[in-house]
Picture 1 (cartoon, rainbow, N blue to C red):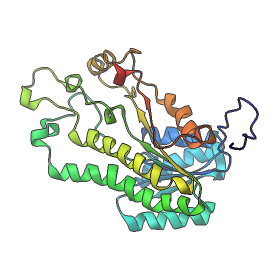
Picture 2 (picture 1 turned 180 degrees about the horizontal axis):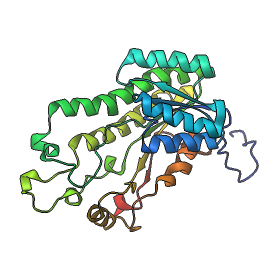
Picture 3 (picture 1 turned 135 degrees about the vertical axis):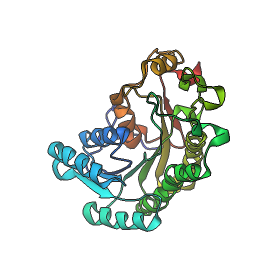
Length: 282
């Protein structure tokens, strides 16, 4: 029989005190929210992003609340040497790595008039395909290779890959339509987004079994659409596809990321936690 837990009956340990957590794409919408939630739970957080200017502002803001438990490191996750340098900086500063959140991605925003027909599959540029994959899949692979290997060496760690509801369902291209445009000019969700997010689930399952004996857990979080002031017509079309009748609020993924990074999910690996208001089950 396995040993009984030393935690009080019914206790859910969501404390991340002194855990060193890495967040890629930390200067972006969800990255900032994830970092703040982890710091609030007691973690030490390393903010990783290629945009040094924005990253510096995020680091400064978070340090006002959490002092020296926050560190910003400018890094290009598509380049192995840049990540190796970042890893040395992190280990020198914090001494270890406990959690990696692969959050960085190219994701075109929905704004009125911002999309063009280039997004259509027949017109999609190979260069854009390669750029998107470089960040979304190659970057996640390299981060797992370098930071995950460090955790495997420590024989403990957590990796969370940020996927999407579009990792399990196809995009409904009707919600992106713009009035007055011909069919072959209508904007769509680019093919790279769905393929990359689906690929992250494959990476999640592969590493969950590959490093299971090293006590490194690997899971994915699949958020639904977050309301950030998108055009009213788009929001109406999207919410009609969601049983809960609304898009997510930016704060609604905080507890989920803490759950996945903490011992509250210590018997969970290789899984995809879908939080989409029910869209993928309708």
